[in-house]
Amino acid sequence: MNFKKINVVIALAGLIVIAAASCKKDDVKVDSLPRSFQPVGAISAEGDTFKVSLKWKTAIFKDSTNTSYTVEVAKDSSFSSIVYSKVVDTTFAEITENELAIRQNYVARIKTMGQKGEEDSKWMLTPSFYLIGKQLFLPLVESNVTTNSVKLQWTPKKFVLNKLVVTPKGGAAQEIALNGETERTVGSLQENTTYRAELFEGTKSRGVVVFRTKASAPTNITLNPTDNLAQAVAAATDNGVIKLNPGTYTVSDSIKIEGKSVTIQSVSGNPSDTKVKFKEFLLIGDFSGLNVTGIEFDGKDAKAAYFISLNGASVNGAGPAAFKAVNVENCIIHDTFGALVRGSKGSTNEQSIASIKVNNSVAYRNLGTYAEFALDKIKFGKLEVTNSTFYTMSRGFINCVSKVDVKPTVLVNQCTVNAFGGQGNDYPFFDGGTNPVDLTVQNSIVSNTPYVELESTGATFQRSVTSGATVTYTNNNFFKLVTGKGTSLTLPSVKNGKTVDLGWTSATTDFSIAADSPLRTAGKTGGAIGDPRWVK
Image (cartoon, rainbow, N blue to C red):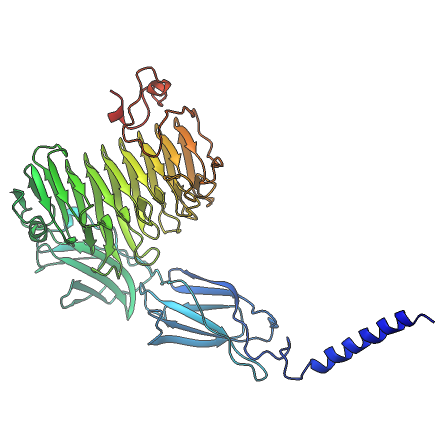
């Protein structure tokens, strides 16, 4: 008899007995969990004209035909005041304008209901969403807005409109009864004031338009370095112009521009003799905008977070705002620790701006955690960056990853971009994510990633993954575009592209193009590529 084999069998049997004995009836089992699992994956929230659709996946270990979920909606993630609550036995919920207000931001949370003595799951939150609502107002004609009146027009379609409400910012509402008309002139308004007009069918909103009455005359003043620039901006009227005589102007706090567009320009037109030491320009509220020309902006001493921050409806960045425009012409901007322009505050689609333009300018040393143009979440009409130089950017160049309700246009033309990318940014030049962007990059020189040797960056130059996006790279020169480990970046297809190594490094600050360089004739029209200032 093989005693060795018998001993092994007995030992194994003993282990099985011990293992079986160690299993207690209160051990966790799939069919008796102490708490239900949350729904699987992220919850989508899609708002349309009259309803919002919430969708999620069945919680694990749950029968999709025999599981209930609690859905709650509030105006913010604290859920201190719940405006909607319902238990559903599906993995979706539709909530209409009968339960939620039009154009109000909401957030929802969902949990799996416990069964057979289980506790409910923990809550899962949705992204912010809102009901778009019907827009019956016709586009506002500029000539219909005066200093003290506005002519509003609308198309009623099948709706029976009963009132028009016109409210000044921070003031009392004026309610006007309607009886079938399709236009109304509203008088006795305050000049240079932002108003919100809203049409109603019963208690339901059927259109909103925001406008600003005109100012009597724009500000036009000239300052000296001993004058207070921040106070001059605060006192300026809409479309006011502030001119700066040569010298250095020091502003240690944020310069706030609220509900108006202001132009600041040097008298000389030369940024080498007119400098502003700044902390940041904050654009606050509808119609705010900034135009700057012929000035050097130095953020080093004040440790400037951003050059321009599109801040929202208030100083703390909360609430929707429709900004006017940003224009930067013939300026030198350096030493920011966040972004050149940040428009990523608030929720997706909550804020908008018509255009951002940078021309004939130089920007360098943006050593923060945002891209040079951080435009995620904001609805922007166009970003135009032309005839300019950008270098030493620690994270990236352009970021606008979130899908918005408009198709933005991005143009990069005749630019020199050197030493950028890092901090783990996967797409250092352009990240369009799911945004339906129309991107054109042409006649430009792009070189040296990451901005510091061995700094981590992704392996792909740019990203745009939405089917509605169009991406065009034409007549550009790319070189030394690698990851922190020295692996070449995956580059987009470039029509008539070149890869001439000009010998630049991350420390280069003079980007002159040699007289015999092939890049002097590499442009779309046979001229030089890159910022024209370097072709001498």
